[in-house]
Image 1 (cartoon, rainbow, N blue to C red):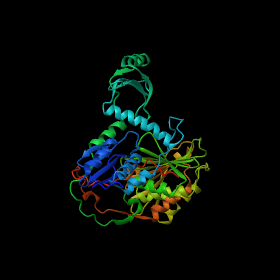
Image 2 (image 1 turned 60 degrees about the vertical axis):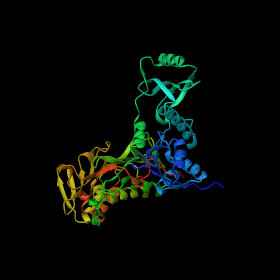
Image 3 (image 1 turned 90 degrees about the vertical axis):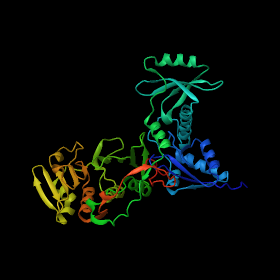
Image 4 (image 1 turned 30 degrees about the horizontal axis):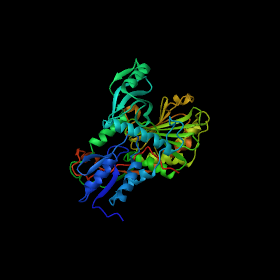
Length: 457
């Protein structure tokens, strides 16, 4: 039996990087644990704090592997619940460029080879002589340092970078590279990619925490749903996908966007993370068939209250309506807005605009009769807003919908606006947001796991 070592390793998601993992070490023998992690390419970020930041976004998988090796050495390894969820999840790549990779393990094998090339370059084991970019892909030529080090040609970037040719000498490799890339050849390594820069930042700046303890928050007040707090949209999407298996989360080539696609391939949800409050953060699009044009489209800005978005997502999960509806009619408009009329919202007509406004004038639904006459174009015909109408300035948040958006969906949103309530903090502006670099490694801010991965089924 392996004797226990007085070292405790707490593994958690990184406070600022979407997929990186942190390790906080405590005990009298932390150096033993640190050496084991450093050997596995973890980087020291602060006293007794290490970070695993890779360019293939596979940190949760390798953190689980590290935990097994630590336990085998007699070191206590604790995995936080949110990191465990990330470890339990698997990615599905949309249109992975290496078509011969059929399984997740095959994809991981390719990315691990790319990670090794990246690490060899970063640690000076692979010296890059020159690079070239032909407008589509980056190539490079380099030589492994040390006795007998071979020279190689590299193709692509980040998790797709691979060796495509080997040579006995740097001279042979450079001559062949110049012959193939004479016009685009540049000396030295290629500029860092966004992914590489993000990994460097995750390794060098551990995170942020509050400069002083925040005062206790006041009790939230109950308000009409359209005045409720924005909430955590990423957590909302995570919950939706975890409870509705008919939707799959698809990873794109950027961590900035998540796609949720219905199993029928005719309903697609796009979530753009970290957008300004007044910009579009959600787009819902419906298609008659997986390969047809859009039938209808709906967008929501980043500040849309969480209860309103939740109602929208739940309606989408309750049943699909992607069939092309008849031309927008008075009957359809009446059905979509009946809950507002029943709740006593003010109804006005101003030229092409028909509006339903809350009794307090702080929210409304607007129908554009002119754009409704162009059903072949997915232009904004409906606008749901709060604070001020679009013609009075920029609303606090807004939802727009095209002409063929199903009336039941619009009616459901109308009912939510007219009858539902939510909560908001009474004085959010009073809360301080000052930050500084972490000095106490145990005070790691809580952040959700990477939203771009989905639980395998």
